[in-house]
Length: 265
Image (tube, rainbow, N blue to C red; front, top):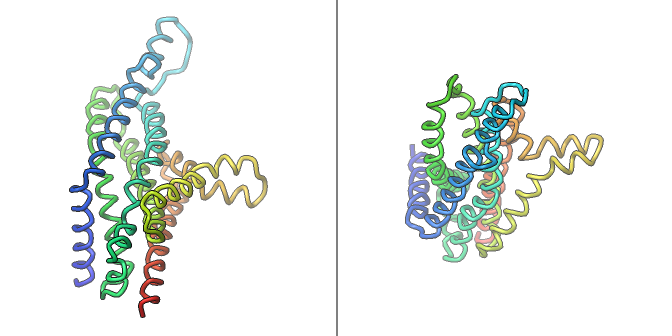
């Protein structure tokens, strides 16, 4: 019970800091603006899916039936995956750098609360804030998909949203670890972006490398596992990869803070 109370206390404190931060609101506004623009463009724009289907029908081009809703989910969530690559390092950059700046990291390191509890509480808080950011998108989709015929199976968009949350949790966990290493929020954001970008493009690198090393790179690729899930395929390997990144980020963060504890002892 004490462990849970400590976890909830850290979670509430961190979550409140996001909801009272002007930077967080600025990031949210930019995210909503860009994601909303591409939502409309991909679906209804001059080169959007509906316009392409209409043009093919008017020209009498013999093409197989197109599942507009499914294609929209594919294109839109591929875009969202790329967008959060830039947004999430900014959200995670202050998780521990601010503690270092204020000199409170040493207090955390020497407190009775375990490093794991602090790391998990911080990660849950920033992930919860991100989930609130994407709730309007789910509302848009419910409104649009309610008019489709035949209706969209709920499992497909829900799995896509779950994949986006898992991707976000993985990036935020790694960003949290990097933020525990430096006092510079800018450096933490840049380094997190660089690390995540490498993990994002390992799939492309794997295509040029043969053998076991190439297979290994493809296995750890964020984009490869993310695209598997947004295609509606509930692949256990992809779930394990994302879970591994999340646990790795928490573990490395706890170890990083433990070093501070050791330095103060």
